[in-house]
Length: 116
Image (cartoon, rainbow, N blue to C red):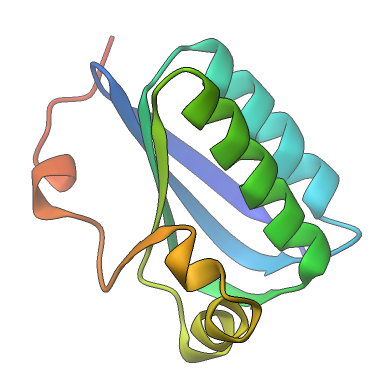
């Protein structure tokens, strides 16, 4: 299955919407999207996972890597709207206590004016 990634950047934060499955085959694409996004310098990144059907350990490692890079510069990576299957993976692995998990993308990020 194809992985679709779209990003809306704002002053110091970004919302990355992911759709599809995050697995061994699609994780490299997600990793390259994070690399590109982090070069722009946001300190807060919210991952909208409302359209992610599946995420394996490879995908979780990509998210953890991005979290580590953001924390190194005083930033944060947050997960929003995970579907039940993804939420269960977060809970079973204990990553729900590592990431801030929102039921939906925070309203203030949806109404913010895009950068550029």
